[in-house]
Image 1 (cartoon, rainbow, N blue to C red):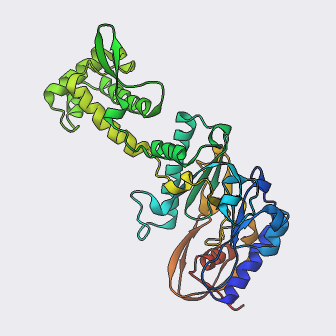
Image 2 (cartoon, rainbow, N blue to C red):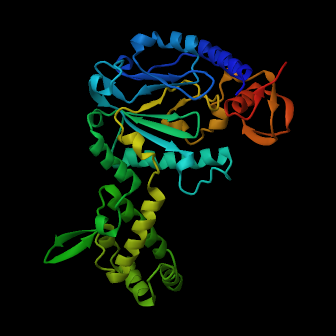
Image 3 (cartoon, rainbow, N blue to C red):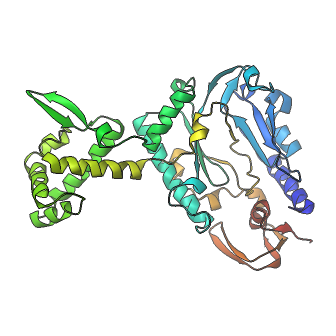
Length: 385
């Protein structure tokens, strides 16, 4: 990035911070702060700062107009201490990070930025479902990272003292690690017999049971021949096993509703095995594991700007996530309404603000929000006006 470009972005970031009121996280004075300035050469982070050292947050942001700004998930007695052991950790938020580049099925080289972000929002919805339904977390903040994904900050009192190993258990659950037929199916004594059952009250067992019942409901709506054909689409379920499953679905549906899978014999157990695998692969959330287990992690400040996109690190209410489009709704108003000249080293396509811009190599006048996006991403230099 040329110095002219760097100076322009630094100035416009300052203008953004002058017009914005950035709310700090809870207990800001107990958190470590860090930032990356607009410097040439290798990226260098200034960290081990307390808010007392930085000064009032709004004044600091206007003065330093940082390229990136972070605060710690952890709370400390002395957050400005240079050595982690001297900070005096006493608790941490539970933070989850979803990064589009790391999602299964996403091709960072072939998929568009817009498509990657859409896939990441789907992953966010799965994560929130697990956190809300399975864990019952209530105090959560959802944030678009300004770059490639989303952050979720959980601040329920019951999680803040968890150590790395305990946070690892939550990570494993969210990822569905080790979840399968053997782990979700339990044995219970029912009368004089021992029955295999799926839990119906919570956890991955409840999720698998819900999917098994959905298939059962589908089968009950079909005529017999279609239902048998549907069942035989599953691996290792032939005509005989299909007939046994279908009989259990029609004649003993309430038993299946209760979680008991004995009535369907080997065929139903095979179906549950298949459904278990599909449930985990379809409902797990591909979080970035080290972020959640790290009690000292620095995470982006909501309301700040992401220096790699010039988009806002945006806090989201739960009811606006579905309609949220980061390439429209995270564009700062500061960069809307002006055109600027940029130098493009190569042609390309950019999708922003519900528009597609087909760009040609050379000097081009663009809406400023497109220009700063390209400059921040290293795809353009500031043109000479």
